[in-house]
Length: 393
Ligand SMILES: NC(=O)c1ccc[n+]([C@@H]2O[C@H](COP(=O)([O-])OP(=O)(O)OC[C@H]3O[C@@H](n4cnc5c(N)ncnc54)[C@H](O)[C@@H]3O)[C@@H](O)[C@H]2O)c1
Ligand SMILES: [Zn+2]
Ligand SMILES: [Zn+2]
Image (cartoon, rainbow, N blue to C red; front, side):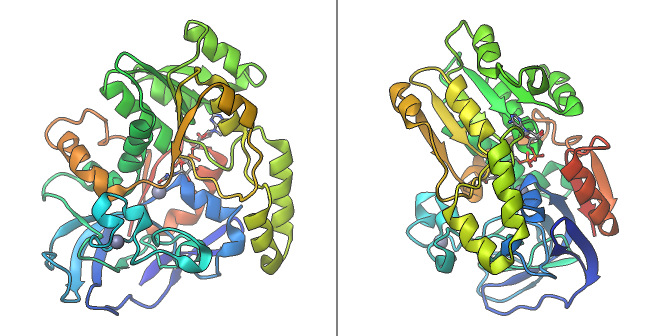
């Protein structure tokens, strides 16, 4: 089959790879109809490169049709239309039964001290071949799927794999009070969707980014926006001016470890990139390598006694945090990968009939698999208006 493969730092290519096969009775094979590119894939593109292998198949935002089942796959049937959550989870362990499939004890990648395995997401998450391909092998398929109705285009449902539950969890963990205000840092796919969800719930939402067409995309949906490029030095003051001097109740960080405006860590990430993988891996796991500008901004911006919710991915083991401010301001913080299956039942009703979150025209690009290398490049450079790319194998 054809698949998008990681080849090296900032290099992906579409290659011929072996068709996936059923290996366990709990496996299923799906024929992929849509696979999206995610901001998380960009971390593999550069900072997480030491944990990738040449030829690894990318992609964790997949939907399609069940082609084959292993037998112990519950009520999954050949021909079912399914969205595949980005994390692989069993559904029956202690963590899964408590709504935490990100921590699934059946698929945890213990070798790296990490939570549940993730499709197409480096050795750190199990090196499981991903879904930017014609076919995908789904382990733990009895639970690792969301059945969706026939009829509407894939656009309606494909974001259940990641964007929707991640943005949903981002807003849930932000604990925005009724009549409250939330600032969303970053208006890529995750921040854009988090802003839409918070707005749908009736909160006041202020979005922050520095890419003109992303700011415009949110503004067009009635969200207040602040252009970071005009407030590089005074973002906190600018937000306080908009929020009665006190700051917002909550902040969602939808940026993560590659934030704009962290020169020291940018240098550390580049330095790690110059090391051979065997040295870069421990460096990454023990040093302060995250670009923390967005997280520091969140700590500055949030009101005293407010909540910060991190959707953006962080990876360093020794990042310095301004404890005095966090403690004194009495900040609450929650974070993590999204527990996809936990949130899906709450989100699904918003995807039938009306389209309050605007998923139908959320994608900016729908292209054949073969165009993946060009799309990775444009998404990383934030050119050509690329926000969300759907690959059509
Ligand atoms: N928690 C999860 O389960 C989960 C799932 C998916 C994605 N993510 C993470 O969410 C983050 C966003 O993903 P995305 O797909 O939207 O990616 P993205 O890279 O397109 O979006 C990031 C946005 O942040 C903006 N930005 C950069 N620095 C900023 C700063 N200092 N202040 C404000 N904005 C800034 C960028 O211009 C960009 O628009 C990534 O870190 C991704 O890995 C987490
Ligand atoms: Zn994703
Ligand atoms: Zn489990």
